Length: 157
Image 1: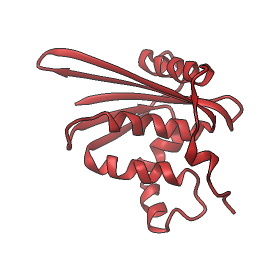
Image 2 (image 1 turned 90 degrees about the vertical axis):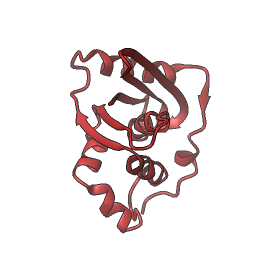
Image 3 (image 1 turned 135 degrees about the vertical axis):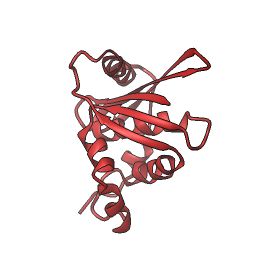
Image 4 (image 1 turned 120 degrees about the horizontal axis):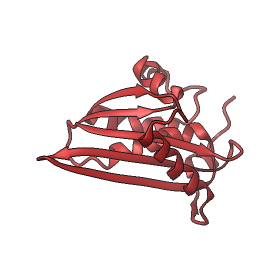
């Protein structure tokens, strides 16, 4: 079982943003920890929340891995746990935001055994707080990437 904590941040929404991901596992009695973070020059909070999950899932090496994702994003957690993304997918994501990220997420989700758990943000949960620190630091760094999916998207009508 791998535990993944995630968080996203955006200053201005849209504005500079970043994600933070903390991955924790115990293999043969040895604890492992990996932290991931990147910043983007113009993005949204929801995109960064979802990207944090995607980056964690992309870092997994073995298909079929059991994963528990802790996120303070109701947008992400409810979309998956309540099955909304499957309806969105059937409808071609018509009038939905972040289509590029959801289309990246779905095969990763199907590749593993993923369960989500919503956690209250800024509630003193150490790993969630660490993800927030990583996301904010990434958003404030001088090394901001282009969120091509956001900057090149067609406005939802």
